Length: 333
Ligand SMILES: C[S@@+](CC[C@H](N)C(=O)[O-])C[C@H]1O[C@@H](n2cnc3c(N)ncnc32)[C@H](O)[C@@H]1O
Image (cartoon, rainbow, N blue to C red; front, side, top):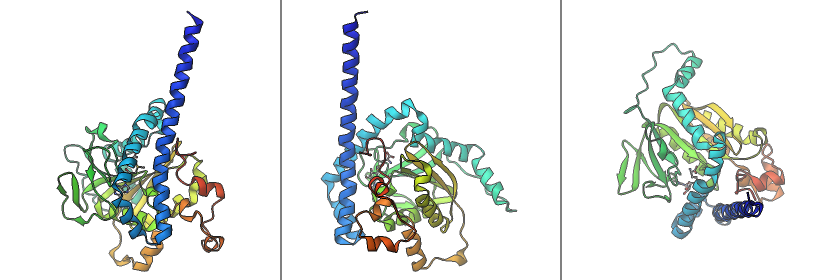
């Protein structure tokens, strides 16, 4: 073997890998910039609805975000998934769903409740699990069309096969109404699963995250599951107070956490829809309090110390505030 050829090959491989990593950082920079601007807009106007309307009007920015996210996920994160499948949020969701709906996962949950009742049969149409993937971007579940019947929706889809829909404002009705490639209404009690994969931290306010969770609860069938994936490369315990807070909020609307797993770069959680006692109707004050529990560290960034002090149990280090939940490969510089 000619040693000079080998060293040239390995040099160009290193160069290619550096170039790829730089490209990834540029894409991540675009994504983080959009999140930052949205948070900034909320800070300036103090009105989450106004900030959101302004954000949605900026089509150029939304399209650039969609393109960057699509490229980052398929060209960069996909490599990580191939080399270590256990790091993949998509694999995690699929494994959970197959076990819960086609294995004995749901049955185990029923038995845990020790209710002396006749449980209804879980009905799957054409043996498929119906999934609403919110903030789907490029429909990462597309490859599992044998097992899953996915309705992929996004504020600004990266692909034409994904339906346009603003989940924050779309009404819930009796049946899905789709016009062209846009969703006008989503049907209540109609999905086995709703997925929020890297969705909730996009929103600058806990109220918006809460709106999404309440809507997911309405859209799920009884015993259906909400899967929440949120990015974080730190150890599980470092954001455990945030995860606990989300769990308490969702519990109050009958979404019981039945699975939690920390992957290398994400927290993965499954919440099972159970019926809520109708006598325990939430007041608007209750709902406001529950909404505030859907916080993330970035919500408290750049606040004055006095504001910070009020949230006695929610204190973060400088490092936590800086990294928040955006600590992902290439989202972490
Ligand atoms: C970080 S990307 C995640 C993409 C994909 N779920 C994944 O795991 O790779 C967040 C996505 O949520 C979408 N999104 C944000 N707000 C939304 C809303 N109100 N309704 C629907 N999609 C939304 C964005 O357009 C973006 O594509």
